[in-house]
Length: 347
Image (tube, rainbow, N blue to C red; front, top):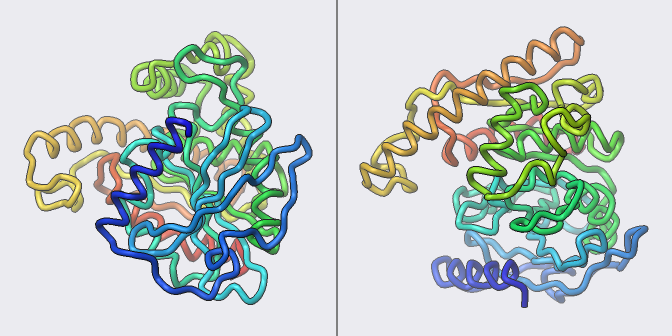
């Protein structure tokens, strides 16, 4: 068992002990731990097994998919539609910089699993990709290893998911923080794969000096990786090639939801926030560090809005007057963006 999968197992057992046992379902996947059908990606990536479990009080499935590009098994958490009698669409929901390999994940930091439990949509949350920006790296990194996440997310995973879950082939995509940058570029690079994109507190620019520093903060300062292994030195064309601001024209035709806070303390920056749990030092870090980061994403997001307006590309914006770079606001944004995403998914 890999470290990543072992970590997921520990997380699952802990959450099961908190939220109780499995709930009843009438779902062919959850009831049997078997796929509706099997299909391999063009490069041979395939489903290896399915395990039902409870996360956030909701029965979900963990699909284990072997990625040929990264030569390892990737766990993927799936929330199933309320009604599985007909094929449903799929929302790919990405975790932040830690990739869900740490304690910061949609199922542990928000009520996303309960929120989607009465929706007729498959929600697919990959576990992995910490500090990777969910992109294809030029070469393996001594610390972060092999990262071919764009290949996995856009080429290897969709055919496996569509077959295993019996989907209707309609997809949208959402992400927070660094993955709020990634979802925009993934949609640009894979025209036609997604119909809608929601980006919460991302920084759409990656190739200008400010954007590059934001990327390096995530990959190098926090992740201890080397961005030269990702996109090369600062003057490498790969930086601009992966910049959603530069390639914003590629977002035309998508249902877009884009949000950010201002960085000023807001309603979730309080001692009674469940993530703060009455700890003044944790609150201070969220207000100061989280405020600085969110003020930067606010700058980037306004630049993206100006760019999209110049291109006459419509989007739904949520520029919050307050709010740090933290999960309480992303839970709010997920719910606020659902009408946009649901429209893109046909629901």
